[in-house]
Length: 318
Image (cartoon, rainbow, N blue to C red; front, side, top):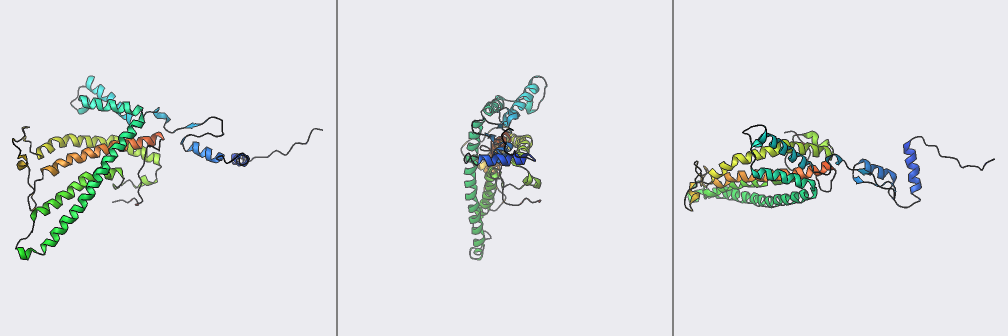
């Protein structure tokens, strides 16, 4: 007769096998359990070694981008369409009439997307601008409160001065400060996700689904809209600052005398505040590019460089 053999364990399913392996690993040291390793691979967090010394399993959800940031694929698609429209199809639209600046911009975007870490640095630089404008908007908010408080308090002294408004310019200054606060804070609102959302299902999506949704809508709708607004507002801003309709600027240093006056009490010039609308859309366009960079990294599975902003406030329909 042969030697007695120990009883062999019987496993009903794969969970029993994993439990048995975990039991054996307990005797080998405080290494991560098999469940944790499998979950790490399944979640797509990069390389997850199953056993010590046995290679790695590559599980990057962004493998389909071939290491190129999604923004580069969008820029490359725009370049191809622009090339076709400028050589094969005759059109008066901008897509077929790029200047050298636009060609350079999209080519540079493609080249930077091949090395995505460079885009991460650009995104951090853009968001520093939002930090500065946030501080300015915060100061303006306090200024608006002070101006309006002054207007309210001085109304009680109207009987003494026999005037309806004690200092009329403060009324106009409060209104323009409020407008400037909004125009300079628009990029901060997008960066920190304080803008209201009407897509209340968005909160239930995974971060990667949110990234795909935001990237697509920003690339197809928001960025083209901001670019169109910038092109339209350029002559509007110049006219607000005194340029005549024939393209000439007034002579002399007193160009401010040609600015449109406010209809509010005090009649302060409103040319500069109207020109700031162009600045606001430039800030919004820059922050949209930063959002495309962030969400693109999440789509690639590089969460350490990407970010999906979430707020504790409940989603609501308005």
